[in-house]
Length: 453
Ligand SMILES: *Cc1c(COP(=O)(O)O)cnc(C)c1O
Image (cartoon, rainbow, N blue to C red; front, side, top):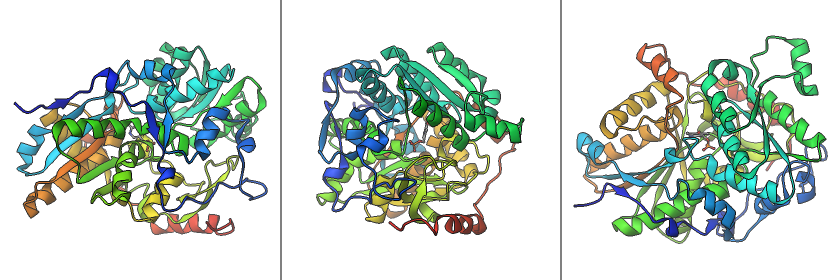
């Protein structure tokens, strides 16, 4: 009998992360200092991040060793299973083989601990005592709380106030792992106090929460800041997903023709795709698809430009596809896909033609997610639903063409904390939303005075 779950032994856990910078024909333009607009160096980032992480950010080494202390914690749930969606294949009547890498097995329920654990480790090693961060829906906050708990670090999470009030269980989870969670804007920081003075009932935003977390980290010697997506080192840590998947395909004897991931900041997509892009760069024919929501169409419609990572313009300027740092996304339910920019490295591989991007609206994604759950059991996070929609489209295309393709998608996380969005879907309260061109023109206006990449 052919396997449905392809499981690796713990001893087969990858020993190194894959750094795509070593294999690309060109590198993305460097980040620029927000004031001088000159390329930044490692020292500029030192107030925010530990040096171990900063050196990974700029590294061009192909393989970067995973520390034993990180592997020891990865072993609690890794290697994650590669699962063949046989029941879905049958229901679709497709000749395609559908595989997914299931990252929902982590304690936080998503891929995010892959980088949270690594970042907490480097902070601990360099004597940092506390880490601050922001969280929207709570997925990143949970992952970092878990990681800080394991390494005996204090964790302070600025949680967007509206989510803080609407998603009490993500907050309880962070508290279970010992984190302090504050609604943002908060009276603890100058940035928070300024917003509260103007609007005491501010619902908050990711941009505001980042400003608060960064402000506190910069002001305290014992404190650093941690980001859950977008940056090179985050993408690097996530490549453990794709490296494992490659080993799992060696077991099945298949190799993916199509690889799919959903994109918020780009980390889970990069995690599954980059190790396979190495093969593509070396001549293999692989179609790699990044999927985003039509309401936040960064890769498909956003210009490629230098822009800030946050609303308050505290971060360096980075070259990326962007909807502008003042972008306020429509309240769609895939909270993790609502960031205004996309990782510079993902933007760069799109520009190089190594990947393609497409956007789907949320109703089609929920339709696909429910179909998937009824056949394969697992209830996906609304973010993952975007990858599932693209996967079903590719499987149906293979059927039309009568081609026996192998499709791989990243199942970035389960939806157990997102059932309110499923409730809204069943109650027919969800609507589709395509970003009006006027919003994109606004972004163009904002960035037009910045340096051009
Ligand atoms: C955060 C999140 C995403 C989006 O973030 P990326 O950095 O683009 O991966 C996708 N899926 C899940 C389940 C998430 O928690």
